[in-house]
Length: 305
Image 1: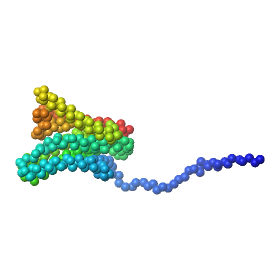
Image 2: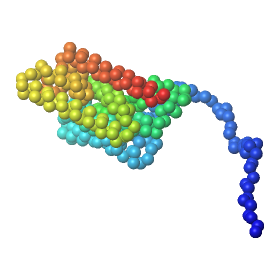
Image 3: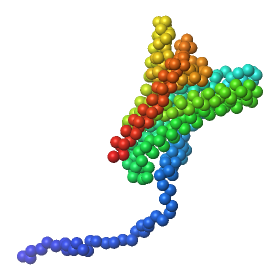
Image 4: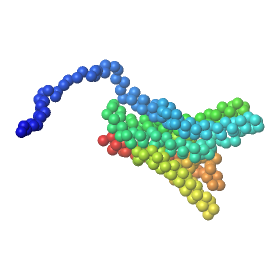
């Protein structure tokens, strides 16, 4: 009987497995724009992203809606002032951001995680650092972008109030002074809120967790401080009210502007800090901004390794 022999597969020589293909790689001979250009690009893209520009329509809805919500009450106040021929605006420039602090907090909660969480989630931070930019450049660009976005959000309604006041022929000197004080106040608020929001958002790569954490910190701190201040007023401990205000970002800004910018305090009984206490408020606010920057630097040094 014939026996079927197994078929042997020919073994290729190792030299036959090597091939060189020309797939068209080319060297880059164009200009090297360098580190400063990379920083500016990161800043501009982060600022655009804070309003959903250059992204999907879905990403534009919430920031644009919050921007409209911030500006519409100012437009209504202007219309009322013009129609009634009032001698002053219904709300001071320095008070507007405090009144709308819930909207500002929601904006920070939605956009701070958007700015940093995706880079952490998809582990693209080390790719940034493989380019000319360094850790400090990344942190400064992200911090400046969110602070700028917040300043646009908070300064735009003040501009609406100012233009409306001039159209209503209110006193030019008083309105200009109030507008300038309001801009100083919202600039400090933008830096403080941006720093706090980015520090919280940088802890987790999950955007949903970041949003919830920022909202919790902003709302719980304000609610707790307001409650303690109300209790202090009832207990005839009005001297403690300004010191309690140091423990919430919103009341911290309120204390600074009531001490140095001529604003009316929203504290219970209208008892705001005096100049000495106001100096402590300024130091605490600047300290929190510096501490936020330092924590972000420390965080991204670890992430970039």
